Amino acid sequence: MIYAALENGATRIFKRSIPLDEILSYEELFTLPSYTSVKDFINQLIFLDNCPFGVMHIQTKEIDQYYNRIQSYIAKPPWIYSSTGLYNDFSLTIYQGLLYGLFNLHSTYYRPYADPVQDPTWRWWQNSRKAQHYYFYMASNKLSKAGLYVETYDFRKKYDTLEFDRTPDIIYLDKGKWYEFTIYLTVNTGKESDEYEINQAWMSVQVSSPDYILAVLGRQELLSGGNLIYRAFILDRSFYEGQSLSGEDLILVSVSIKVVNSDLACFSEFGNQVTMQGSIQLKIYVGCPPGNRLAFDIAYTLNYSISKNNVYFDCVEPDEIPCFYYQHLFYPFFLIQDMVTGDSDRFLGRYTFKVIGGGPYKKTNIEYFTQQEILMYNSVNYRKSYTSIWITAEDKPGVEYYTNQGFLIFRSDVFGIRWICQKNSPCNDVSAQGLKGPEYFFVIEVSNRGIDTSTYCDYRLEFIIHLHGLPLNPHRGLLFMLVTLSILWFILISYVIYRCYLSWMQRKVKAAATIDPMILPTRSYAKLPNIYHRGVKSSLDVHARR
Image (cartoon, rainbow, N blue to C red; front, side, top):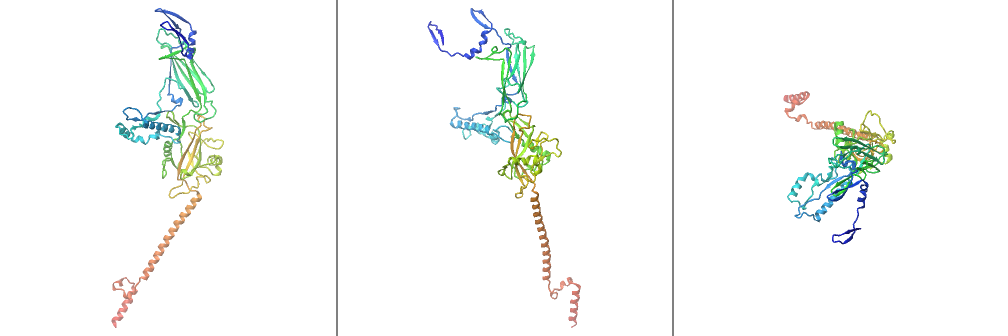
C-alpha cells in the first residue's frame, strides 16, 4: 500500500505490486559508500561503481546446434491468392496437415541406409522437386486449382542457425569432446568517469563434478587497449562408465564461470531491462548426445567393392535393397550421421558383425535366428561344426580380437568379409528357381556395445542385403550334374541310333527300288557292271545268229 498526497491537497492510499525480487537484487548497492552532490539545487544520490570491469562479451567458435542438439525445421504456411490475405478453413487445414506430416516424419525417421540428404523431408519432396518450376509458374499466375500453393523449400530442416555471441543453454559432450569459447572483458571503456584497474579483474571457474569435467581458463591481457581475453576450455575426462543409447542415461554437470567480486555488483542495461553480468552458468550433459545414428553407406560400399573386385554383378531383378555377388569380397562401410547439423563422418570405431536372420529369394521368407543359431553361424567357437556363413577376407590376417562369445571385433583396418556358407549353415542348400541362381537375403546386425572405447554411444544397426549367385550344395550339385550328364548321354546315344537307323533304312530303300536289268533302257547299260554287259552281249549274238 502506498500513501500519497495529491496536487489538490487530498491524500489517498494506492495499491501497488512491489517487484521484490528486483529490489533484493539491488540490495548490495545500498551497502556501498555513497555521497550526495548538489546540482541545480537538486539533491542526487550517486552510488560508487564496485564492478571490476566495464563490459563483458562472449564469442563462440561453432554454432549452438553442435552442442545443444536442438533440431530446427522451417515450416511456412502455404501461399494464398485471397485479396484480403487471410487464411480460410481449407488453407488452415492444409497447413495443419503439413505440420502433422512433418512431425510424423521427424518422429518416425529411421533408415538403416544413409540418405544423400540427412533430412526427413527429402524423401517427402524428392519427386515433386522435379516439377517445382512448373508448379511455381502455375502459382505465380494464380492458376493453381486448389487456390493455394505449397513451396517445397518452405518445409525443410534448418542447419544454418548462426549464434556466436552467447553460450548454449545446454551442452552435450561425448567421450573426449570439448567445448571452448572466448570471453572479452573491457576494462577501459574510454569514458573519464569509468576507471578500472586491469589487475582487479580476474575470473574463476567452479565445476560441480570435477571427476567428469575439466575446466581451464586462459588469461591474456591487452594493455594497449585495456582489455582482457579469457579462453574457456571445457573437456570431458572420459570417466563416464559404460555406454548408453543416444540421449539416455546422461550425467548433469554444472560449470560456473564468473568474474571475482562481481556478484550483485555488475549490471548491464538493455532498454528498460537491467540484468546482471559477470557470471556464466553452463549445464553440461556427459554421455551419448542425442541426434546421432549409425547408417550403412551403400554408395561407398558398392564403389569400394567394384574397385577391389574389378567388376560388379547386380541382381537380375534389382530393388532398393543393395545386392552383392557371392563370390566377391564384401567390404561394408558405415557412417555416423548427425541429424542435428547434417554432418556425416566415417565410423572408425570397433564393432561386431553378425548375421541374425535370413531367407531365400524374397524378403517375406526372412526368419530371425535364435540366440543359439546366431552363435553357431557367426562365432569362431563353432567353426568345427561347419555352420559358419562368413569369414574374414584377409588371407593372412594380423592380430585378431574376439569377444567372450567368439565374435570377431572389426576395426578400421579389418573389415572385409568372405561368404562361405558351410554345409550346416542355412544358406548352404538353396535350390535354384528356374534359370536364376540361388539367392538369399541376410539380416545383418552391427553393434559396438561393450567393445568400442572411442564413444559413449551404444550404436546398433540392423539392415538387409541381397546375395545372389550362391553355389549349390555338393550333393545337390552332384545330382544335377548326373542328371545333366544323363540327359546329354541320352541325347547323344539317341542321335547315334537315329543316324545308324537312317543309314540302314536308306540301304533298304535302295535295295527295294532295284529293277530287273532286262527291262532297263539301253542308255543305262554303261552304268552296269562289266559282267552284266557281257551277258547281255552274248544273248544278243545268239538271237542274231538265229
